[in-house]
Length: 368
Ligand code: MRU
Image (tube, protein in one colour):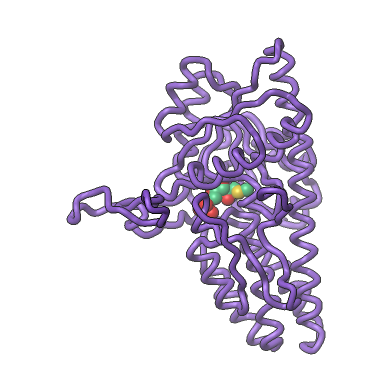
């Protein structure tokens, strides 16, 4: 998408043709910085410390991490070490395991001397595929926005609530939850996005708001607790969120706080949609609450907030007493029964085993 007048993806091959450039998301919206990853270990740090984040982008970064390793050492042992090191970075987003398995499946049968070239080609193909999947999600989600806009009529904006950042910064380009919003904006369908700030890391305030502002999408930042109130007052027409792992029965794991939005949406008859590319479906898991590992991140993310000081420097400030402990579960699970529909690259389906099976019959067979 656009940054100023230039088109950027979130990850691309450096002009030296082996290092990998990323937008370093730790500094947005205050400063736009590009970092270069030169080794598998640097790619692992970038994922773990959230220089890059968002399920699809984590997957593609891991794929490039394998490519960097294959350039340094293409042996079987190095491939396994890279798989494990990258897999340990973040536990919840299934796209990470998916991407690593795809890379291993591609590279393992090859002689070590051909692995580096094949790894870079596969990682690039996965990046391009992510963009295509998101375009598909955009087209299918746009149809829902069109219908709501037609129902409202008279140029009334469709008010969309979103949580965290499932935008272009969370993917290679376009985003999942934001893809329909960008397409609606291109079609001049009036939309307005309520952006949850998404404590503790504020991906909504920092990243989604930056994306919306950069693309001229009317938006309003709200605190995480405001969503239910706005729904009660009829100010939200639909919710669209992303997901880090959706189970074979349609349970949706996403950024902490998503579940509360789904509860409020159900209580107020607001449609609650989840946008996802098929690599985010974990066909091996049938009960999200029991089976999905929930990442527990540092308590410091809760006890401190980051912001820009008057002199322009970005700083962390403590907001709680020094002695107060904090807990930081990073994701929660929204049961399938609270989800109005899953917006995938193939179409919109019911969040249920039947809905997912009908949409992706070949994936179900492969998982059996
Ligand atoms: O911890 P993060 O910032 O990686 O969490 C991101 C999310 O929860 C997104 O909603 C999810 O990855 C979907 S991104 C298209």
